Image (cartoon, rainbow over all chains, first blue to last red):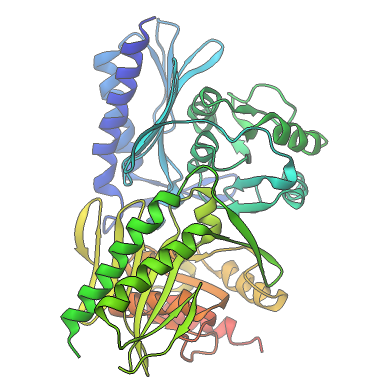
Length: 263
Length: 263
């Protein structure tokens, strides 16, 4: 496997996504469909579709033998054993509200799970990458390595999730139980919160009901920065579902002790 | 009153704040005091204090006769009839979490309230200004005029607030009642949400327990872009407290009809 070629392709995919998506961000007359997902409001914009097509176009040219899984256009089979996992706009509610906390998610996975990932925020011009020997941020303040915060007790931890209700009633109650033990809980920034674990800014992200394309890039970036991502029982999280991501083993273990009690 | 001189000073204050605050953002070893505010966690960083001092230094040189009210260093009397209202870091929880949704707030007020304001996001390099004949955004995608979304029913509106609990139990219940009537509710982005009303992205921000320096700049920017900011009874909001900001009269009136029921 040519690691440099893979990284180069991933950055080319992210660059194409930036060019495709930015004309839609904060544009007048943005068309938002109402795709109902678990009974909740889940707008999908034209930008979502145009961006995934732009990403797939790069892969068709640079990596024609790899498989693709994308949020908008589903699965395309491959022969190389590698799969690109794409979410053109993670955080469509943030996107349609004009908040710069949505992201473009790109992962490369083999049979064991994600081996490399990018979380890109096109409006800010900020890119978090991890895997294949790299863990780095490039953005408006330049380039720096990513490193998680390390072990801290839950009582000193900063916890993020997207919606206060989190998921089902039982999942929401489990989250609320963890939330009662932390120093600070914040809501609403979608995939950007995973970047902040990798950057050593926060301790925990807990979510439920995730899809495979929501979590593979965050797993690669966080693990490369020294962090941990599992499901609520401590098993692999790369298929999605219930996820707990942590910047240290101590806060991860304490959160898991609470979350693992629910079925 | 020399409007150009006032605007020039406001931008110089915002530029000085950017230079002062950015070295603290996402810095290792950030010292966060735990200043308890209404029993909630309210960290104040060294960055907060250093930034307000840098802002006051510009005003001391350029507008020595104006009064100043700042979050960190209180009131300084003046003789001109104009008051600068400064919040060096609005959204200290966002700041300490590394989220780029905190802001530097700068307003100029006369006896009637704010006449000009800036909401600046130094990390993104994004500046929203309004008043003295201007309503504009400059940022990573260049320069554009600000204009609110206009009249929409509550059922089509996007509503933001910072914390799900909003304020007291009664205030939280009133917010939840409005939230049940809107299309989408989002949490957690502090003063950035007011910018999104001015930019025509969202419809409503509802908050309680605000201080004077939290709301004067947002009032100036939103009103200059064609929006409305009042308290929950429809009166002036520039002293802080309970605030409802809107991008149109229709959603403002519908929200007010619900919020005004509480004492």
